[in-house]
Image (cartoon, rainbow, N blue to C red; front, side, top):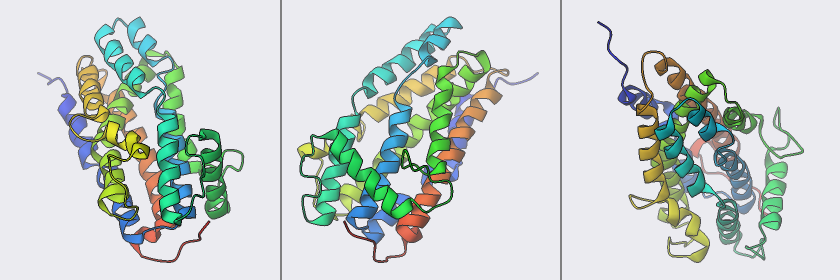
Length: 271
């Protein structure tokens, strides 16, 4: 008699993946990158994060499959993530200013100006890398990671189940790797003399810890996947989780190598 696959199997796979414990944020703390490198890092991270927020047709696709519980849980995540772009830009500009010791981003509320500066930094430091997309300032690895979330446009049944696996991997990585990692390098390191109480760091405060948004998002994603998992949907969900993890770890690898020298302290270009 076959055993129905458990969501815990996918959770364990995500925890064991190299992406889950990637050292990029520890290396950030070690290297203390200059403001241009900080800007380049944030440009890539900010664009990737922006791609993960829209639900597109994903909640509706779940609803059309009569998976109302999963649809509701995913819609809660989507609504919670709305309008976080300006706060992330403010935080990036603030940290860049601290790294420079000067107001290289004079108006932190001007999202367009801050993001333009981040792209300029990326162009300066990463523009010569193979596959770099000049129009967007994105590494090819970041574009590939973004394309995983563009699948949310589809309402096809198999892709919808893959998207549930991707959603679980995203929320686990965000809650247990990305947000804690940002706290390590931006707050705990002391590099920028920033605190979670700084108004400019509200993005991180809102996402951090047991009371933060990411903790609830992970619970929602686990419940949404658990509600639909069986022998048919399990391999599709696992594939979706794998697609996300493999694409994001490729992003971390190239950023770590190009901007942080894999944890080896070196001089980086200043603004």
